[in-house]
Amino acid sequence: MVKKDMKPGLYNLRLRQFIEEVTLYPVSCERMAAGRTDREWLDGVLAGGARVVQLRDKESSDRELLAKARYFRDKTREAGALFFMNDRLDIALLADADGMHVGQNDLPPEEIRKLAPDFLIGLSCNTLEQAKKLGDTVKKGDCPVSYFNVGPLYTTATKQGLKEFIGIQAIDRFTSACPLLPFTVMGGIKVYHIDELCAAGVKRIAVVTAISQAPDIAGETALWIKKMKECLRDRR
Image (cartoon, rainbow, N blue to C red):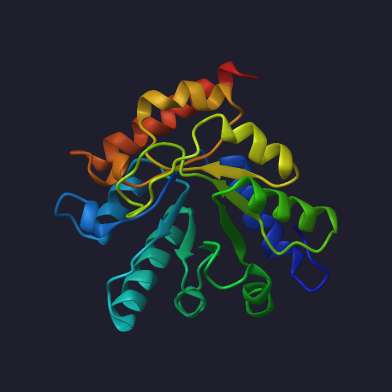
């Protein structure tokens, strides 16, 4: 959503690219990348055609993370892809990211917006109540969130300790509660889920292990993007 205090040119350019170009949304996880580094993962997903990437790293030191984020920025800029930082506003600002993704217990989007007026800001919604709250904020016309994520849909190893998964039927409920923002879905999604997700109105799928654990990261990324574009074209 555009705010009065934003620089509308840069923000809108980023948002337009997100809406028009993003289908697959790869998220990094080095400890679940079959022995490959985040840098190797990044090179693979960009070679496969990814138009957005998210750096998610809860384990590196701050200095290591900043160096990695700057590598991500350099490579994504060369490829013309969007670069999101998970959770860390300080690293995102220092690395000149295009945006951030946060969860319900991370920094509030409205506080991020004060320091990063041009960032795209994604927010995870894990319950219908969270989606309704976000939808109400959008209706008031002062929403700092650019897109939201619905999930986790299916059983996933990336959400440790989580026992409840909301299922594909939640997509309609969540997006009806917040119909004015673009959305992504995430959580245990495999390539064979693409058809049913597109049929449910999904245009952007965020994935971790489906890409990070693939023997050929570039090839798997390209396969997902091709499959998603075919499904979306068939649904027009």
